Amino acid sequence: MQKIGKPRRGRNNIYFGAFLGLIFPAAGFLLFWIFRFSDHLSLQEYWNSLFSSGTMSGALSLSIILNLGVFFYHLSNNNYSTVKGVIGATIFYGVLIIIFKLL
Image (cartoon, rainbow, N blue to C red; front, side):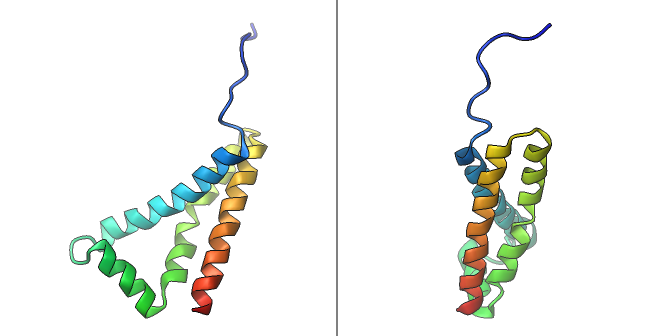
């Protein structure tokens, strides 16, 4: 039997994808700090060390990898609008990486 009712809203739109695409890399960046550096560096010290050593672009590049899981999950569920949002957020992070490389 088919389920009759309202279609699911909120899961397949570009804004939801952009939200996920921005949150997952930021969460990955914070989790990396928590598990690797939080015992001897504060978040501010870690942030400053990334800027001073010029490795901010590398850290952001690694954090974007989490978007692959989000991308492929929504792609396999045919949530193409959400996928567009994830791609847009990834491009935004790419622009940030280029800016940090040039600084």
